[in-house]
Amino acid sequence: MATLAHGIGSVHDLPVSAFYAFAGAFTALFVSFLALGLLWSTSQLRGDRAGHPLPAVLQRFADARVTRRALSAAGLAATVLVLLHALLGPDDPDRNPAPGAFYVLLWVGLVPASLLLGPLWRLLNPLRTVYRAFRRWLPSPARTPPARLGLWPAAAGLLGFTWLELVVPEPAATATVLWALVLYGTLQLCCAIRYGEGWFAQGDAFEVYSTLLARLSPLGRRADGRLVLRAPLHGLDGTPAVPGLVATVCVLLGSTAYDGFSGAPSWIGLLQTNPLGRVPAATLGLLGSVALVAALYCLCAAATRLLSGPLPHPLAAFAHTLVPIALGYLTAHYFSLLVTEGPRTFAMAVGVEDPPAPAPLLGPGALAVLQVSAVVLGHVLAVFAAHDRSVRLFPPSKAVVGQLPMLVLMVTYTVGGLSLLLT
Image: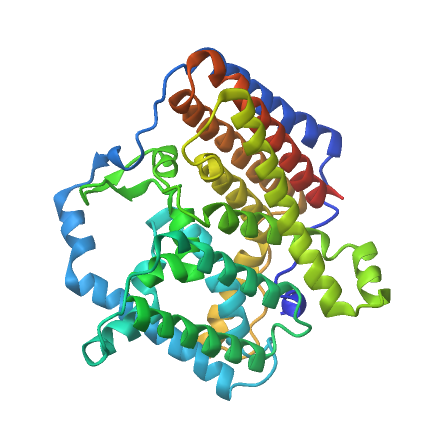
């Protein structure tokens, strides 16, 4: 599992012409923008009010106590297994499934799982299960989480995880994985004891991560609790504009961007020769990448407000449009890792010794097309979501011009994302 030497691997030198990749991306963005301006004059997205109800038998199965308890038990059992492997297994990621379970099956595997099945980690979350098991013996929560706290704890947790994955010298060491899981779990449970079970929905980085990605799932729940099949952009439109949402998505974007250029020879040379040392310099690089993504978004949000008028939540109003971009980046960077190291990790977990990594599902050319397509499609979906929000918030005379800063932002992110893939 050599790719785990720095957490999760990066992608370079793909066999796709940069000219055609950039030309296709810009064409898709500008055509989408122009078509929406001409044909989409009123808001079409209805958030959590939209969707076609699924059969009642599926609703009963999804909401059944036995289903939920089975999923909770499965999540807890898998976590205990990972902890035992990290505690008792060999300190070798090629023979111990704990690092792969943490960095591949959890971090990367949650992407397709949440897209297909919705916010699955909310049901699997072992921390929720442990808290519920001991809740009757715990004191009543002193208070609910402050509203102003929002998703800031999750943003900090995601930043901590990506720092562990991309900056720490030996992230795949079993001791590193064990201490990370124990410390994170202890902190989360202490916060839940203070604030109650509602803490996990905004403080658990992995639950928030899964929930945000699930906003693009065709499976969702209406505001009345009914399980529905819906167009993904409806779910995305229902993303609550809470404090910390911008920070959370910017951490996802910025950390993935840092992972993309952290394997470049020039950056590796800088880490090895700078006077600060490798870890401080890499930490500054990760923070700088996240800060750059956030600064660009904030500048565009300010320009949108200047062109179109004041907004009730000027920063968070368009933050949901960054989610499909983050999804595109995650898919482009980590798809090949999941389909190769995921089965290998699972095989080790069930007792297969030294299983070989399976052959890649796609050849280099097909993989490159998938990665470029994921980045471009993520940005196109973001353009759709931003346009619908604009025509809802602004008068017709300002709706299109108010989107220009966001279009510039999408183009900038596209250039950055494709550059990391193709250079």
